[in-house]
Image (spheres, rainbow, N blue to C red):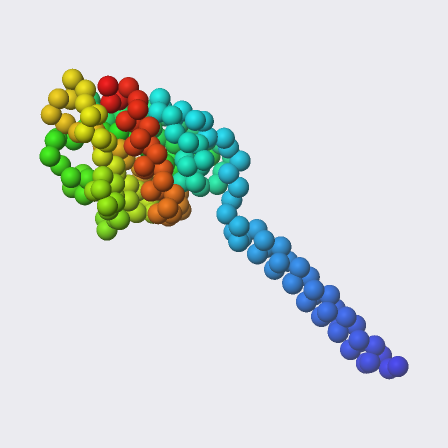
Length: 186
């Protein structure tokens, strides 16, 4: 075999090795690039800021990550908000807040981001999208310090990449029922 033929064979082998290295690298990168959602390595407590909610429903509305923290915020005399952060970044807010009697859930929802064009439940108590929702508690939910107001619940994702109407609806309904059974309604 001539030196020229030997060189051609080496180039071919080098090309084959380079091609298999590229294929291996590409498959490794695609496995890391997010074909699967990030794992949710944290545990969601059953009680969030004093309200007991099914942790699986809460987790479904959260992004992947390693750690979960919660903080209670009371921005005014009638609102209690539980902010959940994943890996230090705010991901979900659960709130209950008093509004003047006579409002509708659809009207109240206009005061919250990401509820535009939401799905309204048949009983008109809930409106939700894949990122947020508003629910109205039962009419028996009354407290003396808010005599002419109705209690509403709010679930909002916070730039977490979560957009899941089914998860938001289930969490909103469960959270609203949990608030109705809590001290917030008595």
